[in-house]
Image 1 (cartoon, rainbow over the protein chains, first blue to last red):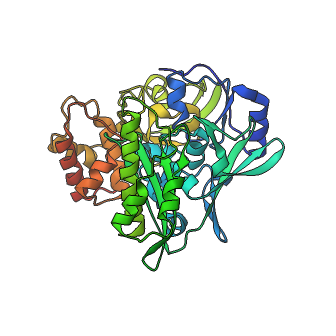
Image 2 (image 1 turned 45 degrees about the vertical axis):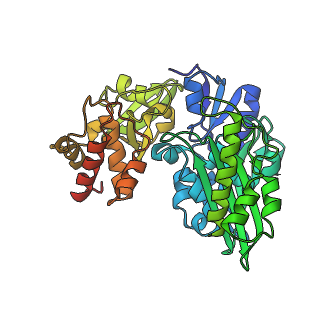
Image 3 (image 1 turned 90 degrees about the horizontal axis):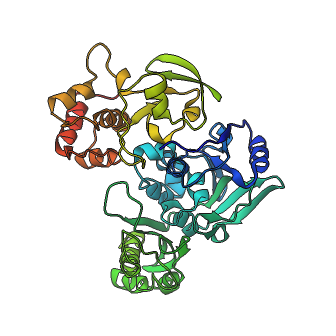
Length: 285
Length: 155
């Protein structure tokens, strides 16, 4: 289908983009790669009156080394995440998960910032930035501010970004060599959304798990941390048995959706199984 | 209306377009590049795949205004007097039945081989994940990609 009519601007600076967005009020949307927004426009599930295209803002593209963090521009594409040497070295989980998003053509256009600002609980990268304890950097009419990932995802397709604010970057702590990681994604057909996804990070020390962090995809209206698993895994032996036991609490506190792909009970089962697999892989056992 | 300049298959086009015009509609209806078909309404099928600045994109999921300043290659721009090696490999391996997915499959394949000139079978299947063949001719499509890779296609 053809999208409904909208006005379009392609600003040449972040400041101009913020002004344009603020001027458009509630009916303005930011477009970057458009891989989430364009399907919604075509199906007329969204009909903004103004699109602010940040596709020309090269300063929002790419990864920079910022001491103990990486600073990732919001327009950095999934393809770039997969191939960037800094991401591979310091934040392999993000590269691995980005490589599972949709298909190559979508990964060429789709961006990290777009995926996070869209906040689809079935999207892969929100749960990943949550597990990474990343910080979202936003710019609005009142200036810039930082929002921890844990406070960013408010509800289904809803974030802490205020109208007029643009997500410009994501700050991710570098992971040391003692961290292992795995993104486990379960879907039935090629390029499909995750029925359930699990992002796991494990820091090992002397045959034990010193610290574990687990983010869940599509187990509620927002991506969530599997707090019960993180607590159970901390201090546990780095063995398949102990990690599977810790994973048994993966669905605690979740409210998984029911849809064509699975009932809530099925998703709870998947969350437990996939968390076990993700922890084992992350712990290297 | 928004002013755009796009190079398609080596020819520069300057047009005024509605912002909501999809790239695939621009290609087919404004400049007559009907070699790129429209397959689905959900960004799934990949039939409309073209190269934009050398990378595969689904042209139903790009606005024409987003392509302003870009260099686009469609299936019509691939052959250079004779069939492109990927086209020839698809022909020789009979990697098509109805042919509807073929332009997208071939464009996705050229992009895959540019990125990875010697893919394994698994890498071929992953690389063409975004392109659906309703005739389920995947076996011959994978064979054709292998054949093109063996022929040393890196474009």
